[in-house]
Structure formats: C-alpha cells, structure tokens
Image 1 (spheres, rainbow, N blue to C red):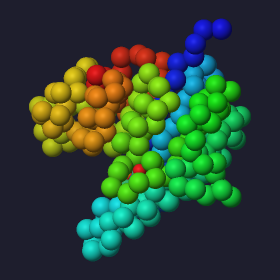
Image 2 (image 1 turned 60 degrees about the vertical axis):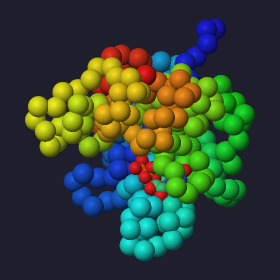
Image 3 (image 1 turned 30 degrees about the horizontal axis):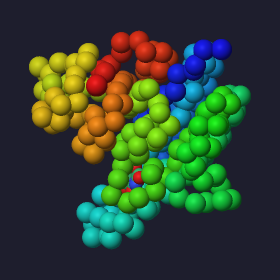
Length: 239
Ligand code: UDP
C-alpha cells in the first residue's frame, strides 16, 4: 500500500452559515459540504484533517473592539469553533465518514483533547479529524492554527477554502478593483511584500518557515473541493 497523502483543510465558520437566511449554521449547507468532504476523502483515499473557524458565531476582535478583554473575547471565539466542529462531525458521520473532534481546549464530555500522536493515529485509520478551538491560545486565528497543526502532523498541503466568492489570491481585491487578476501560483514572499489577502500574516510566515504550501480555492462551488484536495491546479498555490 502506497503512502496516503495527508492534507489539512481550513474552513471558515462562515462557510457553514446560511447565505439565504440569518442562520448561524445552515444544516443544508453543512450537509452538502460534509457529503463532498466524505466522498472526496474516500475516493482519493486521503488522510484529511479539517480546521474549522468560528467567524459565523464570534470573532475575538469584535468583542475587543467594543472594549472587552481581548483574551476573554478570543476564548469565546474558540468556543464558537467547537460548536461548528460538532455540526461538521455530525454531518460527516451521516455520510458514513467516521470523524473525531480534537479540541485544543479541554472539554472531556464533548471532544477528545488534541494530542498530536492521537490525531495522526485517527488519520491513519481513515477517520477525518476535525480540529476544534484553534490552537487553544488567544490572539491567534484558526488560519494560523491550521498552519500549526499542518506542520505538526506533517501534512503536505494546507487547503484554504474560501466562501466569499473570491476564488484565489488576486493582485488586488477583485471585489473593489475590476482590473485585479488571479495568480495561479505565487510565492510566500510576494504575498508578504505585496500584502496580498490570503490568510493573516502569522499564518503565512509560519507556512513559509515550515515549507507548507497553501492552496487557496473557492470551497462553495461544488466539485472544487475534490480538485483542491486532488492537487488539480485550481485557485492559487502559495509556496
Ligand atoms: N481564536 C483564538 N485562538 C485560536 C483560534 C481562534 O483566539 O487559536 C478565536 C479568535 O478570536 C477568532 C475566533 O476564535 O476570531 C474565531 O476564529 P476565526 O476568526 O479564525 O474563524 P474564521 O474566520 O475562520 O471563521
């Protein structure tokens, strides 16, 4: 048996929200994404870990901007990601995909604690691992957490699925500048020096330092996930 490819998928919390209503988590959207994840993992026989964000529920900076203690506000954000992780686990298991939620904040009744070697073991057994609570520290994002976990579990690729209609890395914000063009491939250095919007700088420099390439693609268009995880040239590759 050949070695299976190991990939981390970063999914924003907002990808689970409804575009049609004000639902925080839209069960239909979650079902659809889970179906695609389960099917793709099986077909490509991947070792797949998912880092789920929490922006649909709470962002640390929102509270901090309103005068809350930043660390407390960030903790609220981390707890939001746990809610999303459970929704995703539930939907993945509906689709026959065994899934384990590993939380960076201890929550024994709800999820296993994140233990690196246990995460790897689950992956080797064909389970999808959903990382909850980011990396467990305030002042960080789930993008940076995805990069960190990717390096820890020695993933070969970090797939960053977008949800706002921007399908890769552009020379400028395509929603504001109609002349903006998309890169097929771009270096970490260029992303940093031109301040291109991909992930936060901490995540980018971490990936650069640790040689973890990032594929940025539009997660919401059906079929895209399969292409991204399969290594097809979709969206933008940052390396
Ligand atoms: N967060 C944190 N530490 C982490 C990961 C996340 O403090 O390791 C908090 C942070 O406040 C963040 C919130 O959780 O705003 C939700 O995560 P994020 O904004 O990355 O979610 P996304 O934008 O991907 O939905």
